[in-house]
Image 1 (cartoon, rainbow, N blue to C red):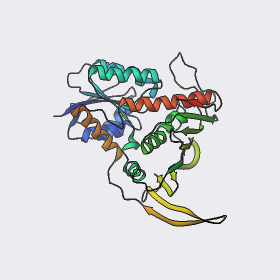
Image 2 (cartoon, rainbow, N blue to C red):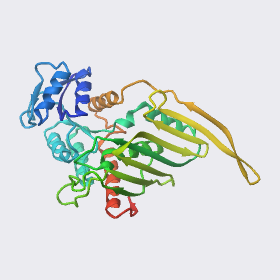
Image 3 (tube, helix red, strand yellow):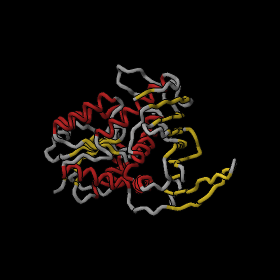
Image 4 (cartoon, helix red, strand yellow):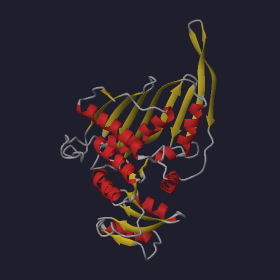
Length: 346
């Protein structure tokens, strides 16, 4: 069986989705939609596309095509809700870039609609399919770092700078998703503070009935989990010190996922203390690079979407319900930003 796919949006990330679905043995591209003609032209030049694939600037022109089984959405977050709702009402399965939407109420509505229509709603949380994240979850479950204490992460770079969402909504979802997956929990309390430098007049494209927020370039986010585990996340798109690093600390070591270290992205630094009277002596100190499967995470994501459709089974990592959880956390962090770092309980 070959599923017919339409890709909406072929900007920086959408092109990778075109490549994966064009090459998947169980899918074929029906159409590629983007309002920018130059994006369609670049996509056509980059990939060897079958002549039967429709290239169009309008979703309306192809939405009733009889060969569509699923819609892949890689458009700005503010457009997700209406596009997803329309696709589900049209009877299509949906794959959408994170975040699901910018509003928890909209997310809930879409999750319920997908269930009502018997369609898969799948959110592209690519990092949760990364071999390092999968291996890290297993290492923690195996007790590699002992009893969990706290965590920290940094996701910084110099561009791209978004104009539709701030650094929190652009970047934090990855690290929150990883911490949630590694812990098997979701936060009960969050807080955040931030700074705006680059676009002081810019505003988040939230629905019109919600307060319009500045486009924060820097955000410090704090998450507290039911177990007492606390995580600090540093997010910035105005920092030339590029970091993609997340750590979980236990009483017997630290698990480090450092995406920049291509040769050893997941390492385990072991160590604890032996107390001698009033002194604490480090013991059992060692470092180990954990072995990982070799795969492209996005390729695995696309494959799991197809699997979800064929088996009619929501993904435990990327269902709409998981997307809703993460949007609820981001929404709470946003409310904390509005209130200059007030604790928000979930």
